[in-house]
Image 1 (cartoon, rainbow, N blue to C red):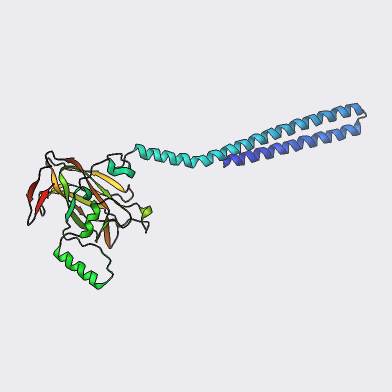
Image 2: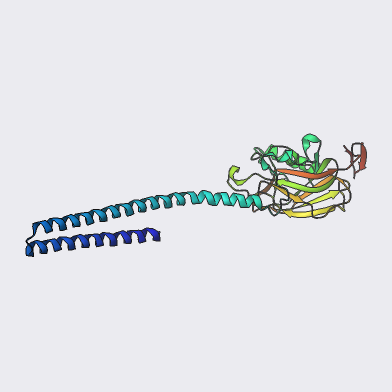
Length: 307
């Protein structure tokens, strides 16, 4: 620090001045002893010199003590500065809401703060995944053949149900091949959808320490029935890789009616070349009044009972 260099220069100058004063006084005493004859005068002058030297020594000691105290204080302030900067950063993050999060939720207890109408334990189901191919690691050719046959006979990837289940430990997700996929969810009732939450694990608990398999661009649609060719578009959103694990998105287009079927379509991920992982999808809104009555909705070849 510049302050330390200036302090060292100051003490060097003071010390040199002190030495010059003492040498000058000693030289004066020698001259006085050589030309003078008064022993009493010599003793008095020597006492004065001794007093001056003592005063200079005491002053130099005080200055040195203050310098050490000031240096210790500067070191203490320097050690505290990182903690102060970190606290200021946390305060700024708390005061400035995220670009996509319109609610300040506690991520540790998210499900206790907003109703999720796409929760499997409450009755929701994944009923269709379109042409999405599930990413599975096969241990034998027989397993691969069974998966191919099941994919041809059934449009529902069994692993897709992971996106509506509690628990998001590494690997507890729906992994599908490539960066494009879709899933249609039958909600627990007819809902006026106001928002959606998409969740992925954070990088620090990922075995690879990165989350390039996380979804990026995705779209939410409301369907009258399975295979509806004219779904309602709630909007297209982007999951931020550097954002919080659970990210809330308000719908961009509000619907005057409620929907029992919601389709999420993933268009891209954050760079993984083999597969994309979706950990959890939550649908938020308001349950349509009088939705407790059982009624049937006509599907292509399927009747779906609204609960």
